[in-house]
Structures are given as structure tokens and as C-alpha cells.
Length: 304
Image 1 (cartoon, rainbow, N blue to C red):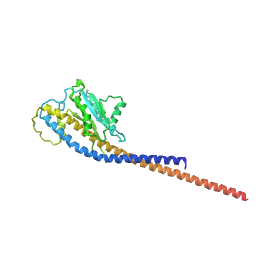
Image 2: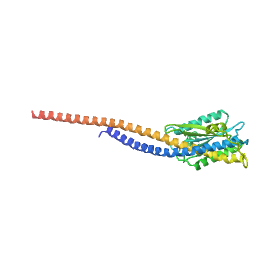
Image 3: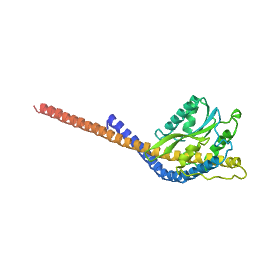
Image 4: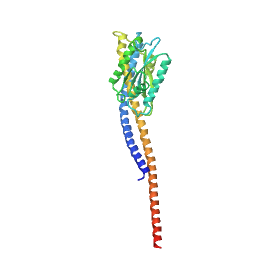
């Protein structure tokens, strides 16, 4: 076997092994998408209804609270960025990071100091490589988040919102994640969680109904204090589930593309290997014919 043919066969074996890996990863991602979609469908109504309840309480009270009251001159804003722990998902994490960078630039353009919180190793690596400060970070659960993970991430954010700005608190809380639209479409979005915009909440609710008046016991402030952590946790949990579904869909699409490309490369290498083998065979036949002709000429000369 010629050297060129050996090179082609070795590359075919290597690409075939890679194709098996990418195909397996594609199938794993496809199986996880279904579970992630069910979790998103189960979580979204709860988050929406909780937002509606908070809106009703805020509408029926005049209490100043971090949930609903905007600062006269907001000076600090917290941004929670959700990325993935693993790669091989196309532009999933990079698109979310770009959305966070655009949001950060906009907030800084408004004269606000931005405090960054990150979920996912890809985001942590991005900011770490650029030596940019991260207030807090969490990793290890992006592909299968639980409510406990959301609570863990929400705790320092709630604490920052309830503090005064001079004590290290923030006036606004934003979240950047990838919204799952369909198997083929996932959009990075940024939402302001706090202070809650009552108009946006009503629009999101979409029911357009007149909210009832409430009597608060013991007080509206105590009710809002109780609702604040539940609201932030539910919003972060829903965002984590949306991001997980988007990550699996992006990874499935990326692995399918890699598998298809590997198949095309194997076909191309097989054609080159066949051509090299055919050239070797042709050369061997030519050598045999040439040798037989030389032997025949030598035999004919000796007979004379």
C-alpha cells in the first residue's frame, strides 16, 4: 500500500470516529430537549401568575418598595448573565455574552455602574480571560437546573436589591438569557426584573382585566417583602429552564451539522483514496507489462 493511500485511510478512520461521537452527542441533546421543554411549559405559567400577583399588590398599595419603586437617580445596576457550562453548542454562549455586552454598554451610557453576575463556565471564562470583575458566579448546573440552583443564584441578588446603594446595593436588576422559541430558533434577550414595570407586567399578563383592590394584612410592605424573593427566584428559574432548552437545541443543531460535515468529508476522502488506489494499480500493471516486455525482448535476443 502506497504512502498516500495510507494517509487517506488513516484520516477516514479518524473522521469516522469523530462522526460517531458527534452523532451520539446529537442524540443525547435531542433526548434532553423534550424534558427541558416540559419543564419550561410547567414553569412559565407559575412565573406569569406570580408576576401578576405582585402587580396586583403593587397596584393596590402606595408603599415604596424595591419591587416597584424606581430610584430618582439610579446609580448601580446588576446584570445576571446565563451561559453554558459546556461548549459544542454553536454560538449559544457567545450570543448571550454579546447581548450582555450590549446591555452593559447601554446602562453605562445612562451613567450607571454595572455589577455583573454570571452563571455558566463559558461566561466566567470570558470575563476571567479579559480580567473583568465578576461580583459572583455559579457553575455546574446549566444543562439541568433545579429550583435550588435558582434560589442559590437569587440570594445575593435579592440582598443587593434590598441594600442602599452606598452600602453596595443596586437600584436595578437585569437578566440576560437565551429564550427558547422553537427547535430552530433561540433568541438572546435581556429583561429588567427589578424594579417591576407595572405596565410591562400587565402587558405580559395579556389578560387586560381590571385588577381587584386588596386589603393587606399585616401591611403592604410585609406582603411585598414576602413576594420579593419568590418573584426573583421564579424569574431566574424560568430563565434557567429557557436557557437549558436553548442550549440543548443549539447543541443538537451544532452536532447534526458536524455529523453531516463528517459524512461529506468521509465521502471526499474515500474518492481520493479510491483514486490513489487506482493509480497504484495502474502503476503496478504498467510495471508488470514493462517487465514482461523486457523479459520477452531479452529472451528473443538470447534465442538468436
